[in-house]
Image (tube, rainbow, N blue to C red; front, top):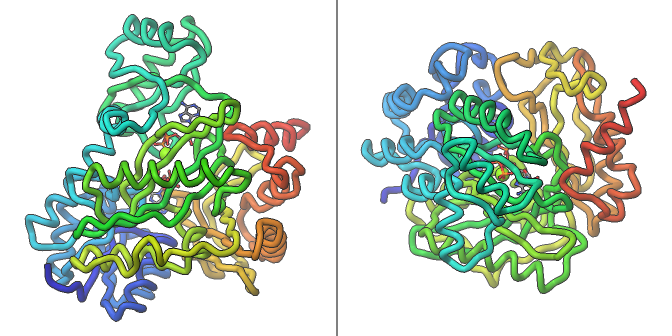
Length: 454
Ligand code: ADP
Ligand code: ADP
Ligand code: MG
């Protein structure tokens, strides 16, 4: 494969800027495809070139494979970076890029397909000898769902085989609830993912979410960059992440990392990817959850403790070059935390709050990184994800990283719209958080405490 000299970025927001920065550092030209709503955005200004790819609605712009490939070819790009969300896990894009001689900065179509369908992924992973959460195959109707759930034992969790972003996940406590959940879930999955296949997993009530960052090249080198803990979630979506995972025995940590690498290797993975696991806090057993075949929102915490630029590595391997380092050369130092700063009002059930930023000033200082596309006067459009910024702090240890995060969030100046900063600070100040006495449902439970009196 020939070297990459111009990258077309098929995304927006902070991740588009993040990719532009990697291009700059590598001496690669960047072209960003923007919707009509993003023509005055920071990525549009910062990229070497911006081209309009359609109306504000993502279905008519950021999600249109043909439009994006044509725009990439028309601007003379030789590669496409899909970022996360949008087309990042659309196998067609990977294939069509290849057919047109464009490098896709992500894995081959086959890997996206195999891991994108959670049922298929579970089968492949369990064939590898890595434990998967006890669960069913595709349940086609309520009778099959009741049968499967009774066998697994309530409570169970209903999931869409094609699901993502926490959508379509529902806890089911008894057979009586199954009918309704089955109907709504399959309807939702059909609309959201164009695929209504559902399945059931055993629900693990006291769990941690631990994931392994993978890097792999086209020569078959597969390495991990350690793990992250993403147990702080709201509605099955991550809000605060950290690396390395705290309060984990060294044996278990190594075992989880090895499992991640072995899964990636077994499917011939290439590029950056993440293998997600659920750790049952009661038994200390871990299970494969899913694999995300793309760059993840929380990749900066890993970059902070390894010093490795994951986006640059993605670009490198897409150009057919080997990873810039081997497993022995990966060293982890310090501790990093990320908070997702969204334009939502925690006092109003996290209602998205698009609007104009009258004031916007990011904190600065030792060990603080802010990934954002916002600026004073920017109007947050109502059409997309409400992520405004990712605040990442690093310290020599967890304590210092947390202190820096509190400092950073406390010094953020945002005027004009509501953000989740007050809630993030509330969580960071909790004793349970400091002691690692948390699990995937913990944040929602403190949320109730924090706002129930309102
Ligand atoms: P991760 O698994 O990387 O932690 P998510 O599970 O939250 O992150 O998945 C990525 C999510 O990001 C998508 O489900 C989507 O809601 C959201 N998203 C998609 N595109 C964008 C974007 N350009 N900017 C911000 N968020 C986006
Ligand atoms: P998505 O593709 O939407 O990211 P995941 O399968 O990765 O969906 O699950 C998202 C989150 O939902 C997990 O991080 C975890 O908090 C919760 N979850 C998923 N499956 C289970 C389970 N079987 N038991 C308990 N919690 C689960
Ligand atoms: Mg997930």
